[in-house]
Image (tube, rainbow, N blue to C red; front, top):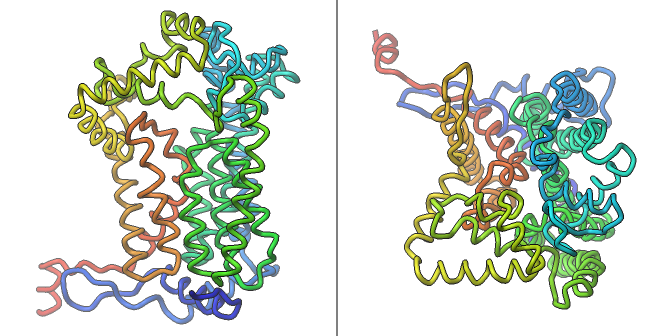
Length: 477
């Protein structure tokens, strides 16, 4: 096992930084990477990367400035764009959907319950952190009010802006300062990356920040000079993630394995045990609550059977069937009220297993379709000035995915020390969504890493010279 000493880390960082800078021109041949930029440029980049930051550093290099710009920009969009005016259609169901309904129930004193319009008793539909945050907003600013919408969207925007900071730290360590600055600024101002924070009342932006933060702590954990308490912080953070978005925990085993390969075996094993133990302790109170409410062991959430059946039934085409969702269909809503949430989920579990036995071929076909939808976006009308731009929408999503994969491949070609830490984001995290609903919102927690890989491969491509036939002829002449 190798260790990450401070001197070695500095040398490795300088090497990675050099790799992240644009390469020079290529000599003859169709397409090749030339040498890295001039020594003068490299020295400038290294100087700007020195810890402690002096007054001579350019203002644009300030991570604090990037975070402030990102936050203010999102607040301006919320305020000037009136995104806080959430449609009242369906009794404000789009104001947080099931999360909003549960938050309303909490704010009204009925506890964590009733994720639809009808009272259906105790709920474990979602992880508890975000609904309680939203319930607190409802308590202070009113249930489903424009003021409450502005506050919760501002809350989302704060964590979306803080993601610039954690993303900068991660990218700086892995690919160098140039890629770090470009990635952080792109996250701050790129229009698509503003959307989830300023339009959607959900835990998406909070989860995304927590993922980048735990990624940074994982990297720091294998530094020899890091404090042992960093594993405690990781355990607390993973516990918070578990209670915010359970799906993200699929990354945990791979983070721990990577850290154990990079650190001293005995120290890493102790640290991993501490991390897992603290995370489990964080889940205990909610697990006990679920057992008392439902008379069965229920770890965090209970809605997986519904998610599986919505996307895999006799009326499905690979995507979820809206009529099966009790929030959209009065009949399904009434059925859940009659059976209670757990009984309703048990029924959906049986229906999914029946479909799987009778139509295994359809399930496999749907799964392959959903793989495509995850990376190229599900079908959706995109109307602009009367034109449906659905083709452009799919192309944009697909190109981003292709470039992110290209960045990961390039990291392997260059034998980047962090390549295996980044791999689970593209290969492991999406797996659950291939069998349920591959909505773009579910991909957002890995988009910081995707963006970092895209910036990395674009930075490297600036040093690629394509020797076109007529250029070669002109040179020979």
